[in-house]
Length: 332
Image 1 (spheres, helix red, strand yellow):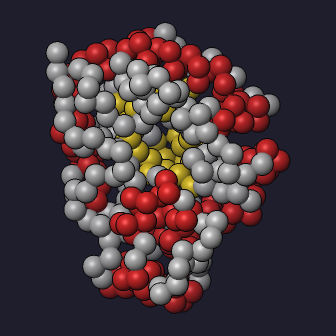
Image 2 (image 1 turned 90 degrees about the vertical axis):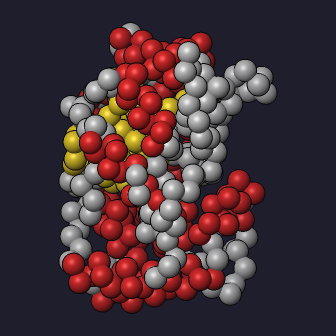
């Protein structure tokens, strides 16, 4: 496993990290969660990414039980705040009161005194950016988080936050990014790099599409991620025959290069120096080890050209917002 510096922080994160969105929030049982987490340590993964909303606290609770058995300095822990945590419409967003409330709740579930990275899960255009920035600064000052990041912010929102916070406060951006979703390259990558902000990307395998298991002309398999109503927006973007045909064209390219399609897809992500880590999910330990094997894999220029040709017009490359991202910035 190789490691990369996370933005302007002192954190060195594994190139492949373990996420808990659709798995450890209740998608798999406790034994599988523990087995996958322990497999991550075996594979050299030191970066674990979760969020308060995953399973309404279930993912944080699961990792609180498991990770607390490991020395605190042996792993880097990230969580997030923004989405609703109850039926109360006020129990969401990035107001100072909500950030203060949710960070304490997350720390209690995670059984730790601090997280290494606390992230805004989305931007909150209903709260003045000055208030949000000050609230996150207070979390750091109190020692409850070492560093601050954000997920799925638009370039306008990123710049507005930097203008208020100044340099160095934000160390990471967490966009959706894959061979099939290249939109962040358009503006977000360059803007963040100019301010010392790394990318830790989610859905690098496009919710499983880049494993090659979905076939063009065939219905969505029952029980798969894209059979869930929660995946409707992502499904519309990347699950169609033209995209699935492009993915099938990648299969022989990966085979000729002596690697699996997921390894090819993850290595493609990591070809960009601005990417510090690719967040992967796993329901079985062998998937953790298979994903970890992509760390350090180098893709030749010829291979990258072949990938581009195989993909054709399949990738989403424009400034399309990911699901739940909201445009706009509010000031005091």
